[in-house]
Amino acid sequence: MAAGTRRDTPGRHLILYDGLCGLCSRSNQFVLRRDTADAFRFAALQSGFARATLERLGEDPHQALTTLYVVSDYATSEARLLRRSDAVLFVLDHLGGIWRGARLAHILPRRARDRFYHFVSSNRYRWFGRFDACPVPTPATRGKFIATE
Image (cartoon, rainbow, N blue to C red; front, side):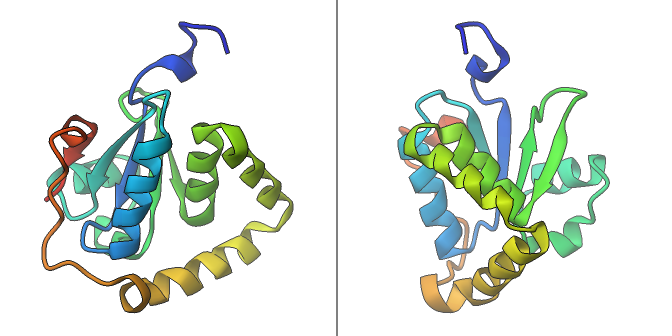
C-alpha cells in the first residue's frame, strides 16, 4: 500500500487481551516487536475502556475474559469486532512478512480453528502462568497501551 493509505494510520487496530494471562502478555510482546507499521494498540479486558468498547460493539464484557478480541478501525464508526481465531489471524496478517502466511489457515472452517483456540485458551493459565495484576508496560511501549487495568 502507498503511504497515506488506511493501513499506514498508526494505531488503528485495538487488541483486547486478558491482562492476567501469561500467554497474552507474551503474545503482546510478540506483536510489539513485529508491528513495524505501528498498527496496533492494546487494552486489558479488565479495564473500563475495554468493557465500554465491548459494550459499544454489542458484546457482553462479563463473558469476555476467555477470548482475544481485535477491534479493527477501533476509533471510527467503521469499527469491527473480531474474536478468537479470526482475531489471531487478523493480527498475524497485519504484521506482514512471513506472518501473512497465516492467512492460509482460513481454508480451515472457523469452527475447527475456534475449537483449537478454545483448547489453548482453556489451558493458557496452566501452560503459561497467571499474573496477580496486569503487568506494567515498559516506558518504551507504554504509549501503545490504552488501558491496563
